[in-house]
Length: 372
Image (tube, one colour):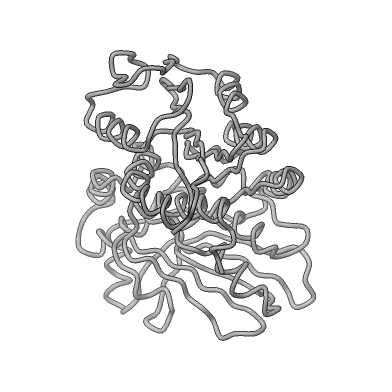
């Protein structure tokens, strides 16, 4: 039992399915966090594209969880003051980036504060997520993020900013929906001096689900529609089908694993998507005992240097560690100079998995002594 709990004020940027699931997780585990880890969780602000709530003080996770359910069911909106169930809340309509930065700056951090960021990815520059994360770090808040863009374009700078302020920037949910890839590498591989030589993986659950559906006889449009109904595919799946989403994840992994020097840039990744794949191609591959999957990876030569990175359709043979994936499964295989290949597999990703990655990062940032 922890004698006295320390208040942790959260600012949530983004209120789509991921941060809504995060709020439900907070409400469910709030008592455990307080009694077990001494963290008294409170919400300072919730920000989305169309509206925002900022509390004069803070409000409990239970209120945020109820709001999440109401927003998901269409019964409430962040830009509607009539949706506010408690006093002391300022409602903003269509907040600008500057307004969001001001909300972050107004968050008291005499105890602890943490930004929880889960907005749409910007492949080209990682904005405005990077600006919000940087603002939080400069203000002395931890920042946990599900966004690939800042990892790809600004990870080194953000880590340096966090170190200067004595806080943490963590991004476990940026790749494979919260599966502990980055923390496993840092805690399990690096301490033993393992050097990464290459990695390859099926990193995009949307394309995996589509190809799996086509193996069962669905057309691409039918499989895509099913993926969208399940909430796995975006309304605009261009980034998934073109391979760009997987390419961004490959560069994020290169940056975090420090594979190659200097780290490969997104424009240097060879990308070939699956927009033109046909049902006949998929069926033909299956009849020959193979599976088509969109695979991303990178490798360095024996003498080091810049990594070579690619994303392309591959015909996987039964002996391939990625062959057993089905549906929305994703996986990553690491090849090092110390261990036999290690494959980390996620069976059917969900939005709750992504939320858990944010939740675990929040705990890791605020209570590092509890982590191995």
